[in-house]
Length: 459
Image 1 (cartoon, helix red, strand yellow):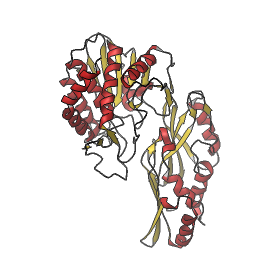
Image 2: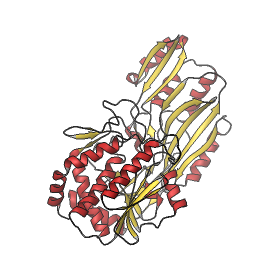
Image 3: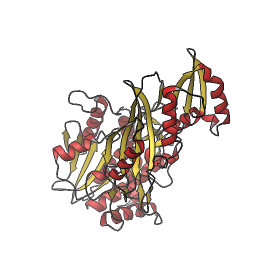
Image 4: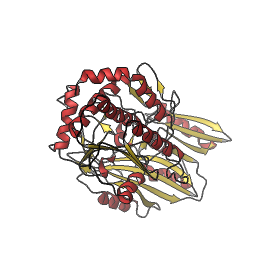
């Protein structure tokens, strides 16, 4: 493909691309309560309609599978190349300087929830298809774009598509839901809850999703603890992360962390862990003390499962990670929501066994919420090498190598599929964070890479 032609096309259609970005970002497609014919709520259904409308304008054959998934075919024949992505997003969370659903466009960037994960990459893929079509580039293989709406929670969309629809599957595929150049290995995913019954009133909460490092947490304490709390905060190495207020005769502790995707939890600071660390220094009593002691004994400030006795590592993926993404009290029960990314050399079942053994006799109940099998496609495979070549041809970067990730993308859903893009090596990663943003200059590079990759795989 010719770089100058693509750049000329991008410049000519720049406002159109940005308008499409703004449209899809403006749809709040976080997981919502199901409605009739809308298994993940109205927002997800609207997002799918947006995708279907775009595909139809492009001349693709669009099928909607009960508002779980849509797939869109370009060209005839058996599907050869698949592009798998998702239109749902994690909750906006706190700390935004703009409307997270505004699709704010400045002279340098586009800001909004999902612009990196994964709405922006979807727009880039669809415009890459549009560029190939409008420039009359001949493709001999059918390209199938598959869009789901439940990726950020428990993948019911893709499970429905694979197990109920049972479509003919592409022979090669990629998901633009990670980093460039290529993610050849993805760690196994295990999400679970640890729950105990409580009889006392405990007002505590933090986080919003299993797969996000929580940026905020709070707990309501007896006013008699105000002095001890002030002392504990003053002595903490993270004293700036805390603030307190006296309200209704109680003292409220707020802990502020740094949000990040659970696949990269080392880029964040867990507000729940920070809160528990300070609470552990107070003369607490009753069930709140038991909860705090349990947390600090089994999780603490660790990120790699050391205190839960699940720490492990392998050459491809590095260490297991353990994120406590959410704490809540509901229906007389206290719940911890946990997310582990497991190296490909270890089984999900082996980690489950260790967790259950560790909490035996503590009064906590283990419940598996979601699992995803690990992904491994050899680095010397034709798929990986073709994608690497496309990336290098556009960027001139021949030094970067295929990588592994803790991320869980739709690449796991079908065989011979890897994650490809869209975050560039020098690009700021604000996925799952406040003020998620995409630099416009990076968008142009995304398009060039995706056009080249689709062309090479479908020519």
